[in-house]
Length: 351
Image (cartoon, rainbow, N blue to C red; front, top):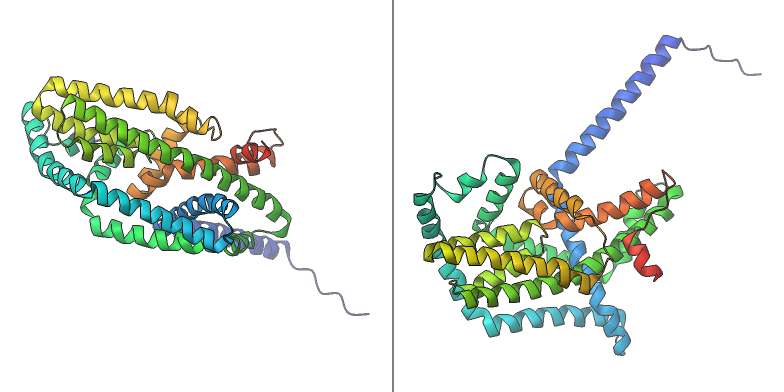
């Protein structure tokens, strides 16, 4: 019979347990710090996932309507989106470029003119003084990094194409990071989150087109300069719900104020009307209640993520809030608390 090892002193065991717990806490804090330092990379990965969701949403209908295989239909979907963008550029590129150039040249003069009549020196100074104001000021000045933005967009598009070609490879790799006992639950959550993103993206793209068109036509009717360029800005910034329309209204109001305060008032009224039409008519028609994220939750999520991670976080804040909402409802409210709760992606798939 082998000899029984002597029992270790209780003090030694307690010290070992204490060191183990300290190391666990340090590892968690180091992991959180690493995630924060790599937040830009994580956001770029999420942006690539959005691109993949768009392509994977277009490809299945093409595959059903034609005899193309999955990869061929995906290639046709990507080429179709590219052809649409090129076509818009050919038809309206020169006019939009001229108006945007005029807009860029006119905004500093409009800001200076407004500063002379108000007790602050610049629009940026007016916005600053709070976290939200600083975020909006940074968003307004983000256009100076044009080449960096184009490079980022190129990386996101290429990575999104790779993910769309073979999504299961990346999905299975992500699932392997979780214990086997919870992989099925995480997999179902990923399915629901992807479906919720697909629903929101489809509705948001249609809303962007409609809001940009309505804004451009309305500004042209009331006589605001560079109406087409301002409509394009409003349509693009519609991708950032709640915060985007506020940022889009600033250059239009600045230009209108150089003409008259009456025109600025009409411009403000136009943006209010367009946003009411978007929230009460356009979005309910194109998406219904498929993605039921409470407005206040969406607002604070966009602001919080934007403050933490800068303009890129502001851009992707709302879809990140949608995915987070699905994960919290599925993994915490339903699984941990045992509550019966509706989840956007699951609700749509069940119907």
